[in-house]
Length: 165
Ligand SMILES: [Zn+2]
Ligand SMILES: [Zn+2]
Image (cartoon, rainbow, N blue to C red; front, side, top):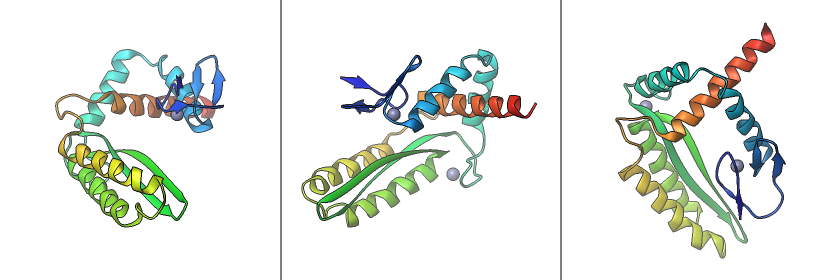
């Protein structure tokens, strides 16, 4: 089975394929292209950007780092419809836990009311949040997710810069 070159989601049907890989959505394809662009950024520069972000202040609360990618998982249902998503964001651990807790409460209230996926996915998303709160990325080293997001941002900034020049 194919999986998205950017986010790793399994692709059952469709998706976009190009020379850089196969993507589950236009959004992932765009990000995948930025990853390709980021490969042209000198490795030591990128490394410094990743380390600065990791050791920098939290973009959400302004508090001290380390800062990393914390994933919050949610689900909501309305009768036969259930929608679930995982939303990564860069923040300190405390902000990450706050989001995961908020998403857990939300999912606990609005997740169940769909059949069958609400009943299946609500405990899954809640357990993912609890796992994130209990574990999460190491404080010592930047996670691969943080590296990926910083690479994408640096590539986007470089492209914008060259477009303006
Ligand atoms: Zn994807
Ligand atoms: Zn914070």
